[in-house]
Image (cartoon, rainbow over all chains, first blue to last red; front, side, top):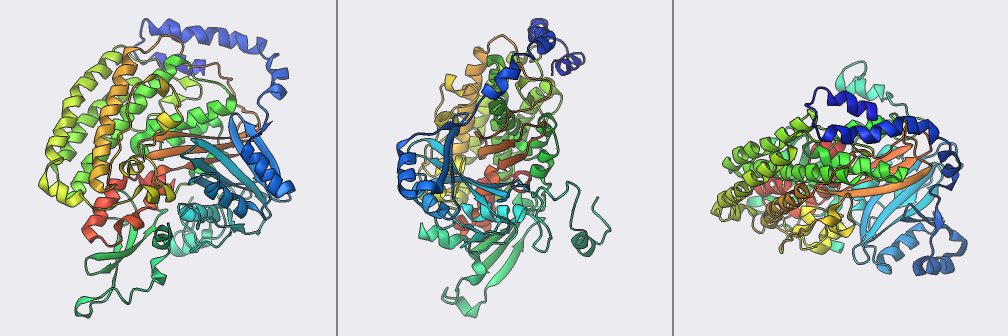
Length: 215
Length: 386
């Protein structure tokens, strides 16, 4: 990065007062990097780790659902709970009705193909009253449907459709679950890890665009 | 709440036999777009009409889908940085700020104060530029041609500052993970101060053209009403939410960069109609100017880059970070597996979520109002489709 800054300084007229300021941090950081290589080594495992999240809400959830709550942690100041997929709808409903999480920010997924339950499905919730943001996470097996929270937050209509489009996760109870960004007839779900970066549905491209390939 | 639910279901299924038709007129399905100037890009809206009245809409999006989230998984953290500019291309600086801050959080580093000040100045300039572009095109859609020339003339000055700062005008790639890659140029502060002085009366000028203009008021007042509870249920953010009377701005609610240090207000509306959204955005431009003039006065000296390793390899973990982009809450959810490439980058685009509210807002209105409402939502299709 420091090299980058220097290289760009040449065409731009160098500010006389600014240049030493820009170089100062650059100079110690370059030789400092190998020297500082030692401290990060032990620091790495001691770096940020998820800490247990202890709050009244979490205690109440644990009491009610027991082992259904798999994890409740704070990582870098951000709270999240990992819950079993069978109770996730209940929990999300409770979040909205009892804990004032009235705004569903996002629904998204992450694919871990090697795991037994390859999908992480994540709801990001926000409460206007508490000015608090939490994430609710559940693990899903391939092909296992997730509950739709459209009834709770109408905003999830398109978000769930996008999740379905990109990962092939089906949402039970969604009023009109179909692809949103890709064409309806497209085959494959691009954000799955096995889907290559230049892969595409050649058949669709052939038929609809009349060309061999879009590449 | 039930009303909202109803409005977002597919209209094909809805019973429309009892809408009361004149002269036995049939319902008409009308395609608007994807090549329609008032859709601000390649948005296709299927309208179901009873005469001029809109019974329902369905948006078809994805024409501009480039798979940004997939690309992210195949690039390093640094390499992905310029891509985010191409999402909301009229507010590229905001996109970059959100992404850089998210990665910084994941790395557990903080940008130095000087970099934060530069970031705030450029981002707020960008907010003004974005709102100016919105105002010009929105007014053009409704039939007022003059504001377009006014706003583009003034937006040019902002682009000139960007050009001098980093060489680019639109997709600036102005920030790096850990700070800014460029020191400000000689006379940057003067240019910004001059700009603030220059544009303050210009905003009054826009208001003079529109605020009390009878045609403008008739076309926007009471059009596309979205109430506060509906807006929250639909996840709408940004000026659209604030115009509905919800005083919520991430710069205040969960301050990032150095917004804590500035004195500004959150303008809100009362009725949640198109006219209020116009007033809110105009007021926001003035607040942005306030922030800029405070920031440029006390911009500190010091480094512009934090100590960032040459190879960015965040520890295993996930982060969600969001900022108040000109269009609303722009969030990045990044999952790191400890390698040089992000395992997953999810972008929470404000335009995408806000566009969902279109159906709720135009039901029962006229076709011409659809044009006004698409304009007032301030969507950028590059961000909707990613």
